[in-house]
Amino acid sequence: MATAGVQEARPAPLTSTSEPPPLFDGTTRLYICYYCPYAQRAWITRNYKGLQEKIKLVPIDLGNRPAWYKEKVYPQNKVPSLEHNGKVIGESLDLIKYIDANFEGPSLVPTDPAKKEFGEQLVSQVDSVTTDLYAALKGDAIRQASPIFDSFENAFGKFDDGPFFLGQFSWVDIAYVPFIERFHVVFAEVFKHDITEGRPKLRTFIEEVNKIDAYTQTRFDTKELVDLYKRRFLPQQQ
Image (tube, rainbow, N blue to C red; front, side):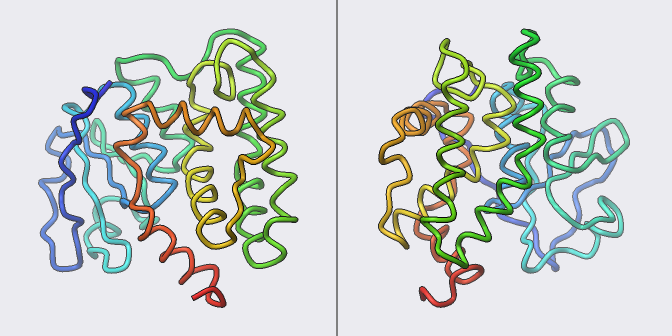
């Protein structure tokens, strides 16, 4: 994992006027966007496994993306994507498992059958959970989102050998934490509501995950995050 307290330099995002890197030259590249929660999943995975020297970060400006990214790298034109061994793989949940399986470093998928099964169940639900959270922003946000935050609290109680979804830090935490980070901040700043109030396990999860450098190195500036969410999802709050 990354050395404690040392912030990895963040390269400037590539734009429509940027030249492409020397594609398919044997370098492994992770294409991301700094504010994208899906890209953050793959970025955390890379960091947690200590692959900063083996997987090069290539940030893309999604608002002004280079044409060569779609034409030559990833036709879906989304992030994240991973250029590895002459091919490009996408989809953030798939990339967590791909990076975990194909590179050295601490394993992110537990071998314990009960944890493995519960983990698969939680990850299978993550897309619908995040869709419901975004929908809540446009409605009665606190009331609509509260049952989802309650479900997190209940899930954290399943295993007692640590503060994370499966006890110890795993791919499930990576799948969820970019969204927990964002909604924790947005509910506090926009709705003046603490999502950890009455949810001690969720509070502990947030405290403990913020001690993991692999994650904190990927966090997005709080003010920029709130401004982004106001523009995209909460125009009435501007």
